[in-house]
Length: 422
Image (cartoon, rainbow, N blue to C red):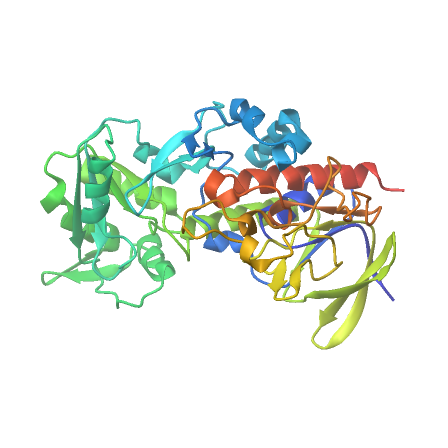
């Protein structure tokens, strides 16, 4: 007997969760199934809408959408739908800034670059690159992913409008070099006792004391994004009080605590909306031709049918295996949706690392309704929509548009799915 719902969303990343949330908030019975852990934990926690067009930095993402080609997901949806998707995100996720303006904010990264982004966690707010307050970046000896002195040098070379210095210190508690980022966060969350110079103090005070020796009048201090998990605001406030300076987190690469925090908030919102979700069980096939009757889910070796009136495909792109490539070509593995690509593999890429590679835009071809289309432009399934990195026609890495496209197309897919319920 099939497990039934009104809307079945396949994929647990930002696009899938947004789609499920949009549909559930409209009153539909929604189930989300995902095989792997959410890709959000690999993300920086920043929400990029549109950072670059033709290698030029974008000030206002909405104005810049007119410069994109006609088949870009933003052009297919229209600016109003993109705004509605971002409004859903703002309403669902507490503790994020940026909704007060259409303009991108500029945030420093762990590599010492400046990144345009549309939404950012409260913990990163004091690090805005347009703020001219002098800044001390602090790295930890056991956290090799953030070289604070090098990042400071890069920011200076890039012309950041503030004086920047960097220092590397030993994290209190003498963590091992292979300690997970969650270990740093836990020590600060619990303000665990650590031994410092023959006395026992809380980890937050111990960390502040080690930074004070290098503060030298800097007005704000940037740490790697490990300042707690459950109590990050309290940790940051304590450090600010101890240091007498503004404190912010610098977005890091994977595994990312801000990404994990964002994942938690989104799934909490999904739970509050009444949606069901499950992880660890892959969708391995389907039944139907022009209309999907049900999909087949592998649950510990047993193939179980999951039935819905409407389906949303949000399994990701090449990196997430939502789109797969072999010597024979590029395919979408669940429904075999059409993925446009050059027949000659040598046309998939260019010689230069930063050239305009065709593979960066591989994905399912859709129209404005987000329904996958075959090579003749005809809709493949009347009750399937695709969203997020599963879509083709845009280069999220070059554009810095991945989160925005996922939110906008996820919102549209979930909303349209409810409109089409029979």
